[in-house]
Amino acid sequence: MAEGSLEERSLEILDIPDDLDDDLLSLYFDNKRRSGGGNVVSLEKHGNHALVVFEDAETAARVVSKSHVLQNNTLTVRRKPPKDPGKLLLKGLNPHTSLDHVELYVENVTGMCCETDFILYLSPNKDLVLVHLNKPLDKGHLCELCDFIHPLNFTKTTATVKTTKTILRKA
Picture (cartoon, rainbow, N blue to C red):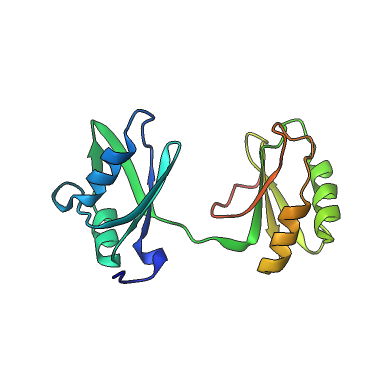
């Protein structure tokens, strides 16, 4: 039986080498002696990072307090940052797209005004824009927004909008 909230039982694993087997990673975090871990409820790997959920919060606390080296690779383990409904992240932007163009786009899609309702922060590589909303979107409005998004000079064929966990430095 799961003890503790999902947030308390969840950890992010970063810096996972491409050639590290998913099963080995799961077994490592399932092993109390090696990782401090215990019963793994789920492990979802996405590229060089993963999300692991343990059966109880005490196990997650033990794992996050230790350093981790697996097959001579240092893994970064941290608590999963909470999502912020007051921020949206636009990914896959063409670095040559002007911030004014993105501002107009966000205003048209959201019906909000940049002067009073949101602030845009451009990433150093100019391929991400953080939209900081003065008033968080409710879940229904966010779903409508995701359905409405269309490409805007993006390097990929679709735009990605999601609530973000990271704050970018103002460019």
